[in-house]
Image 1 (cartoon, rainbow, N blue to C red):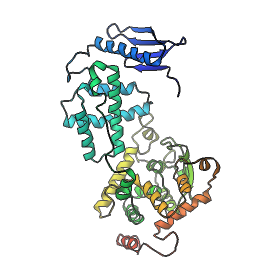
Image 2: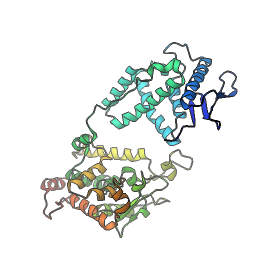
Image 3: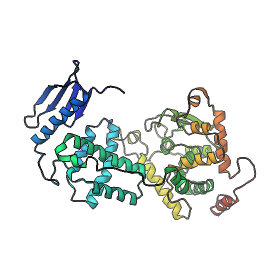
Image 4: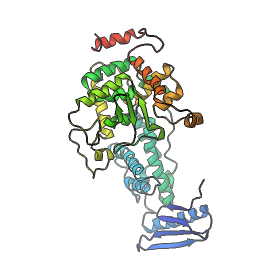
Length: 420
């Protein structure tokens, strides 16, 4: 573990000097002068303790200490802004932190308007907020990240202003009480092959753009944004392959996510039909873009600067299509969301005995062994075993037999006009 040579404690910045001692610097709140002082210590722990003492004195000099609870020196949003500003996160992560805090700020405005200062935040407020999020159906991982921002702020404020906020240092906790994630996916949010076929039939007729996304996610295992930011040059119609690579709107999740994979016949036809129907081509060749992009080179998000759909717009289009499908009597699991198409694809492939390592590389997951990472070479021909298996399951045929083993699914397709 690398040795820590500098740190920030509230308003005090501490750095190790070449002599082995520590130098502290801060701005006096009254005179606004910048002060530097060599601390009489040589260890990281002693330097942090002395920096906390200096920071506490600065807090008293600013008039924060000694006030009654409820009239504390920092409002809630000010405390979070200061904590995020002094975190070690990069600029994009800081924006994400503030976005997650907005949910808590909205909760306070609606249900706890008397909570103004950070000193008013208590364990009871956090417990009520957690319960409110669970009642709204917020996923555990999403809630965990929302609470992380509050916990980070609590730690920062308690360390920087101990006389004011020490009482809420350990009040923000969150324990997992919901069922395991795999159990939830199996029982509530995974589409069976016959359900997915019926959904594709509906989307092909009523939502052509979402239909292409569904084919890429449910028949090829692409992530939602990998499908949404595909370009024309990334698709090879002759070889029926799709290339996932970095572009101006999207960067793949990790190194193995950069891949070229063969796609099944249904997915290739869906992409080809969509390209042939495009009346206006995007300058960079993106397949899915608004007719009148509102962004520009000064926009905040890189998706808007690239002139394509933002990730929020993609999610909105998916939700609108699924709501319409459910209203048209298409039976889908209650907890199903679009990003679970990737999980549905993997579940169907594993149920059909697809090779684990081959499937792992096909969907762009990091290899789980040295053998896979360094020695096993995977070419398109081996990948075609996965795409052929996906086409077999989509056609409603058993992977081990040419006989149709999904007669109930075919009857459902006939009812919705997919088969004659």
